[in-house]
Length: 261
Ligand SMILES: C[S@@+](CC[C@H](N)C(=O)[O-])C[C@H]1O[C@@H](n2cnc3c(N)ncnc32)[C@H](O)[C@@H]1O
Image (cartoon, protein in one colour):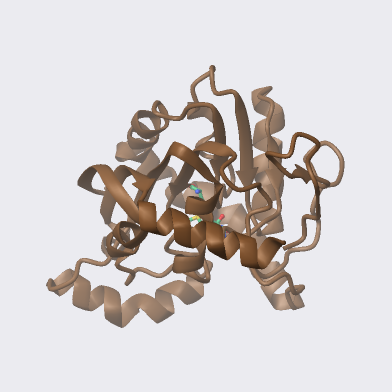
């Protein structure tokens, strides 16, 4: 993680030392915080450059509409994980109290910052992986994850962090592409998962992300959809809202206490 944090003055949140306005992130890092070798740096830059054009058709054919519908439910202090180039930015309700965007890959974060500056919206972009959020426990009302859990290094840790930072009653809003287990498509997803990850920034098309979410959260709303306009192996989507299950919340908080005190 490249962002450093200092204790917040309110006792309810940490204060990022690195913000869009002060210190742009220039060196891509891995999710473990180590510097990328040069080839990975170039790959990360290329990935950020092609990301929006690659998604454009899918956005037009329905994903943008899904983003708008999902994000209409964002309330209070909102934390987005893996914000990418900031495609969600335009769709947050105007009355969201605070918006914190996190993105560990510097070229992606740079694009999100540029989009943020053009939007005139107040928000900060923190260089942080979902597995280690620089945000205080129980300080967030809404966490947003759109097409991120496919790419995080450790889905369980990421979801544990999401559960940790949510206030009681807080919600996770998600759109994720998932494995179509038990189908011909699912078998292709399994076969092509490695090559796809190699050319799609580490994105795995063979993850059972709904099972991962339900292991830690109570799913409140859910529907299955298609990411029309995209390659078949990433088409099956789950779209929904969830709240941390009691056990997961206790687990996440214990995890927090052991790691952060
Ligand atoms: C497919 S993109 C989705 C971007 C954006 N959320 C969207 O809806 O367009 C996946 C994003 O997750 C980011 N990412 C990779 N590893 C991550 C991690 N460990 N934690 C959080 N985000 C990560 C990638 O850099 C990339 O920006």
